View 1 (cartoon, rainbow, N blue to C red):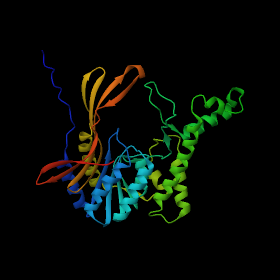
View 2 (cartoon, rainbow, N blue to C red):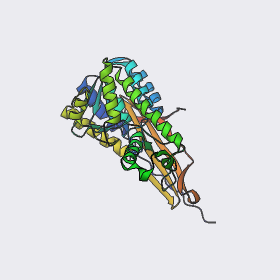
View 3 (cartoon, helix red, strand yellow):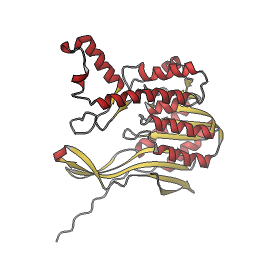
View 4 (cartoon, one colour):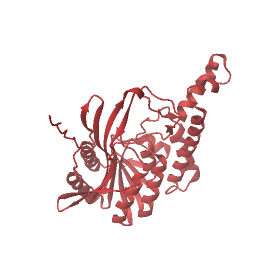
Length: 335
């Protein structure tokens, strides 16, 4: 009987020795502790990040000033609020370092800092909420799609302009495509987003009117969720933003390049309907310690449902420590 050939699973590299060298350079230049928060395109700001931050901050202790590097395309706004709240318990002053994108929920994290330093490639974004609901419409692969308050408002606005082919009330027709409960959930989520921004800003901005103005602007002033808010516009909004030192920017861009190499998708194809995905999605790193969230799962294409489903999911957080130049990796359990 012929033996089945074992398949070698591709894995992303762990480059903590290289990232620790750059973090040491950054802390020397800044004269204060430094924490990096990085997520890949498939990663996101999530509630489990808070536990990783807490473990890192406990080892760091309370400090007068903390520098936070943020690079992320967004995620959960309530998780961003929890992260800012936690950071504020350990640092009297926080400076956010933004060399690249800090979008959506990452923008929420950034506005929780006393000051924001932005490089030439840096941008924030609008924070209007999109929601993937259990009753959301589905795409061609049969997965629920995100729907935003801005999209619904624009549809209603266009309907009113055209009078919906003679129909005075657009909702009966819209309910054929979007469930009424989705409308309610999105409206609630949009109000929540403004509330979160105001609460985050309150950690360092005493003026209630200024907090409200900034929060509403970030939530409703842009025609696109991904609209890039660069330094000049961020200043016009009322945020405390200034240029990032060019040497610091270069170090942070170099750090991002290493994280990007670590965060590359390591796909192992079994056949046309099965593959393995091993990818580092989120990285939270300080001096001597890093926390990595790693995807580690098989995927199977279910033809009758026209979608991929996960199997044998071993995805988890790992704590990576560096001592005497050697890497030690331990499972970091979060439930």
